[in-house]
Length: 238
Ligand SMILES: [Zn+2]
Image: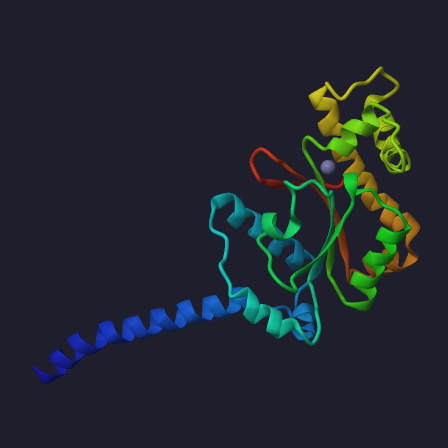
């Protein structure tokens, strides 16, 4: 009887204790900041998987709530982000939010139309070769104003030069046909093409990024964010 009573009283307690420990570990793991040791442990493919999982949480409304000030303190001595995102400045596409990442997790390099230039390349060489990020995502998005401007051949101050960097994608997608940003399918195709070309630009303009990729220490991919759904679709290599 005593044994049975003990069993009956102890089992639920043990179960609760086990559950509490699991919950606590999950919280700790989800909110743990990236250290150089933790960064080294993950592969480029795992880095992409972390971003995909984060976007799924974002879309599902299940983002992780962490103590950000605790993370500020934990990262004050250094950073070891696992990935770098090259994204557009569009206010609807903030990488940390759409990939559900927090302090110290990802480098965020943003410029209208997610175009690639020397400064972007240099920033990514720092992110990868120096700091050790394992993946780069060139992130285009639907309804991109810069892409529409490039399609319509907009000329405006310094923006003119920036939009010229999207011109190769316009030429490739429009295939010599007359084009207008009113063509929604074309806008989407140019944005996708521009993101894919971003990979080629990075590899052709940087021997550092090329070497890291060839050695399997870095993966560079393109993806498209849908501003209507929050979903990020990773593009298959063309
Ligand atoms: Zn944009």
